[in-house]
Length: 438
Image 1 (cartoon, rainbow, N blue to C red):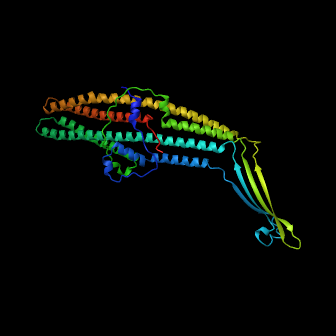
Image 2 (cartoon, rainbow, N blue to C red):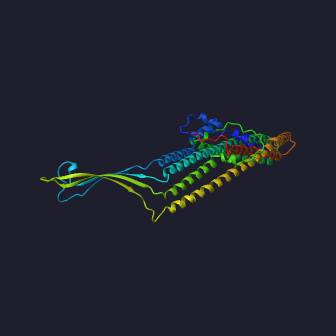
Image 3 (cartoon, helix red, strand yellow):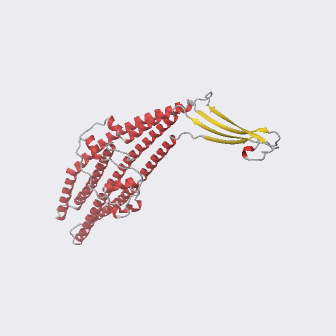
């Protein structure tokens, strides 16, 4: 089997809009009793809780960008001093009081491009959050498709088990009539009864599996209350025409998880530069206005007043500590981001190779079931049933053929499930047309 990376990448169609959350409009239960995969994907976008959490992370990153870009606010200081407890503050208006009063305004001036570096760091982290949202959608979409195909498999398995149980019930009634006429041994009827009971148990177990599959899919689309109504109606995906392809670095670099890791490397680099810029002394510039008493005036018991102005500059002195800890921590974070990028790329390459191998194996397994195993099992079962009805064979032969056919039918349905999930995993592992829907 040959798989074309570019061809399937175009077929992936992983274009989605993950903008502001809007509640999905599905109040009718009929929407879920005939659920298609495209409809389930729409509900995933609007109702999936993991995607909602990823959107909140993007919003938090956007808020952090706003915070990082905020310039330092000035500081206003007001004060009075030189109170005389014995003389009091004197009569008259506020300007005539015998106290010193001052108004001061200070402004921090950052040096070393600290604000620009904070903004660049925050924007890189915001970009990483957007890519995380894209990757979260990819992962949730894969989980949704797997859950949808598991529901299809559970439905097929339940149908096979119910048909088998019904066949055994019909055979039991016919065998009991033949037993009354002496046309069949009591031991054969007992064997039929045992297999009929086993078929009923298998049918009940299949119904329990179906319920679990419904609950899993219902959680993915936020419809737990309607889980019992869920029914998948799509057909199984057809075999994909394929040819081998190469996993290139350019292909990996377009994946959202790799892009997120690269954005975090850029953020760590800016954070490292920001930590180094702490060694640039920031300057605080201030201006002050003072209003104060001058002393008593001639022939008067009141004080006169005067005004003065001042300008100040404050510079921190790094005599004892020069931010060595912050700089070292930023270096460690940068190296960790580089290692995380390398690990993400390795995992992405391994995922593509593994999913391609799984797809090829699943397709080959399904082809054998469709082209030979199912055909031969049906022929064998039909021959055994015909021979048994005409008294040419014993009950054990027909029971064995029924068990074999049922097992192969369930295995074939499982193979279809495995192929569909492998195809979804391979398609969604490709980075084609992936946008974050901003």
